[in-house]
Image (tube, rainbow, N blue to C red; front, side):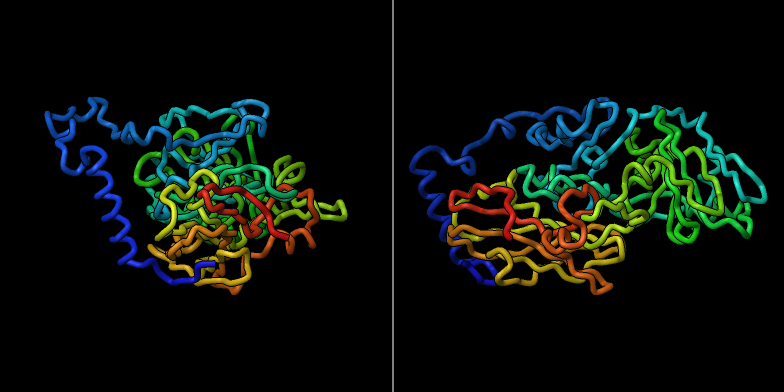
Length: 413
C-alpha cells in the first residue's frame, strides 16, 4: 500500500510533460490553438439577472431514489456531495425532504403564532420577526435517516445516496429565545411544540432548554431568501440535532410542560434496537465523516500518480479537530488535513494526498470531535442497535478502489 505523506512534485511534472508531448504529436493542443470562445464576443448576461451555472455543470444536480418514497409529494432529494468542495452547499443543491409537497407561501400572508404556557399569546408577521436582532450562523442539517439504508450492508453505490441527506449553509435569522421572550414563558413551561404550515402539519417536541440555547428562526440561507423547498419564508434551525426537528414553513410554537409524542416522534424517527424496543429522543447527530472523492460516482480517472482524497466530517456536539484516513481498510491510519473554517456544528472539509501506485485500496475516514468521541465502525453500532434500524447510522464507510480506478461501496468485517 502507498504510504507516502505527500505526492511527488517531480513525478507530477514529468507525467504532465510526457502527456503534453504525446498530445502535440497526435493532434493540435488546446493550449496553442485559438479556441472558439476566443474568436468572437461572448453572450451577454442572462436578462433574467439571476446567475446560473455553466452548461458544462448541468449534470451537478440533486437526485432522488425512485423506490425510496411512494411519490414526489413525499420526497427526498440528495445533495451531490461527490461534485462539491469546501463546506458550503449551494442553495440549489441543498438536500431537502418534504412530507406533503412544497408549501408555496405568500410572505405578506405569513404568520407565526406563539401560544400555550406563555404570559401573552402572540402572532408575528415576517416583518415583525425581521425587526429582532439578526444573527448569521453556519450549521449542517442532517436527516436522521442519512445512511440508514446501509444498516444491513452496502445498498447504494454512490455517496450522494448513502450520505447525501445533508447540507451546510449560512443561516440568517433571529434567536428563538428573543422571540419567545416577547411572549413570556410561564414557570411550568418545559417543552416547545414546533409546527409547520404545510399540509402535513409536521410537528416536533423540543426541550425548552435547547430552544432557549442556540435555536434560530431563519429567513435567509447563504445570503438569499430561503428556497420554497427549504421552508420559505421562515423555518426553525436546531443546530446539531436531527433535521426532522428543523420545522419548515414554521407557523406555530406552543409552550407546554411535557412532550407531545406526535406522529413524527413516535411512529418515526425513533431508533429500533436489537431487542425490538425503540429508543426515543435521540436528537443529537453524532460525529460522522465520509470520503466524497474518490467514491463510486467519482472514480479515479487519471491513473497512477498523485491522488487527492477529500471528504467531509461533522458533529452535532461541536467541532472536528481531527480526521483520520486509511488506505487499507483500517490497518494503518493517517492524519488527514482539515482545511477551511472549523465552525461549531458545521461541516469540515478534509484532504489526504499521496502517490497512488495503482494497487487496490480500501478507503475509510474516521472523525474525532471536540468531546473526545470517535466515529465508530458499523459493526460496533450493530452490537448495540442490531441490523434492522433506520436512523442515526454514523458508522465508518468503506469504498473499494480497484486498479482500474473504479470505486464500489463495500463493507469490511
